[in-house]
Length: 115
Image 1 (tube, helix red, strand yellow):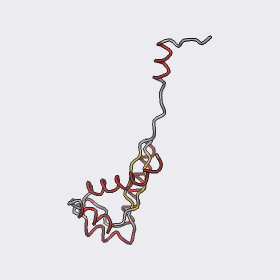
Image 2 (spheres, rainbow, N blue to C red; image 1 turned 90 degrees about the vertical axis):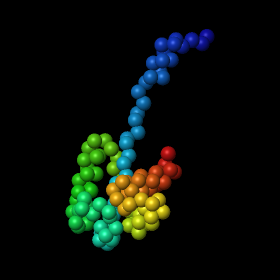
Image 3 (cartoon, rainbow, N blue to C red; image 1 turned 180 degrees about the vertical axis):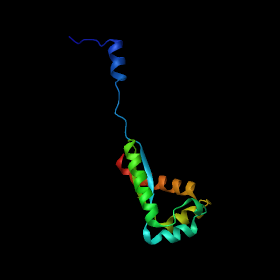
Image 4 (cartoon, one colour; image 1 turned 90 degrees about the horizontal axis):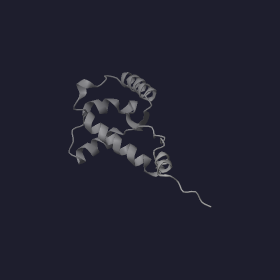
């Protein structure tokens, strides 16, 4: 004889906490040999580090801070010339907003097959 589930049992089962997927954030990762080209194209140059070493140290520190908050910080290797073409194709300035959008799209593309 089958037992009928009560409405309360069904509700409890549905409301069981689900494991949340960790938040993922793409972090633009540049190459040392492209740093000067990157700076020459950036419209927000004044807000950027002067040297690749300074930028790399700050980016590494930021990734650690994000991980401590439970955010998966995924480095996304950026080719500066590809980014410049992308900005031109999308009629966007080569600034932090455009770079963030570019990295988000790259991360999404990279993770399509992993979902």
